[in-house]
Length: 65
Length: 128
Image (cartoon, rainbow over all chains, first blue to last red; front, top):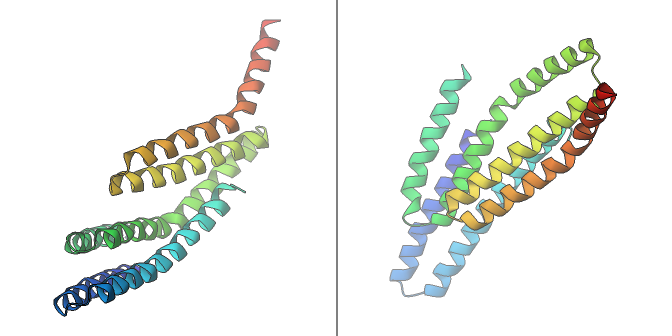
């Protein structure tokens, strides 16, 4: 159901690091920093969704209300 | 069989993490989180059926219903605490990992108190 999620996160990671290199060479460090932060925020949103899903499952299974 | 799928996910995640670890270590940690959660979600159905089976056995023995749910809660707390501790250790934050472990132990102790009390009453009754 979600193996592609790992690939998506990895793709964003690689994309961000490549963009970072390109922008560094172009001499725009602040833009590079911005793209890095944007990439991390996007990945974080995905991972947070996944973790909340995990916590919901554990809550229902172990009756941890 | 799910085991092949799970091992495949684990290996793929590890390879991707190694690729990205050099450039973006923060994203590599999130890949390991995602892989861990995905593997758990794959087996969560089987876990639920095992717990249903245990519940039926408890009903047949007509043991006090509270004990089994407390045990389940303790297992749940232990699992989530372990999840957090391993994650922090992966990221290299051993201090936070030990704090989470400490908090988990306290929460489990709090849940175990009623059971210990009933055990104590039982022993006292036997001794009289």
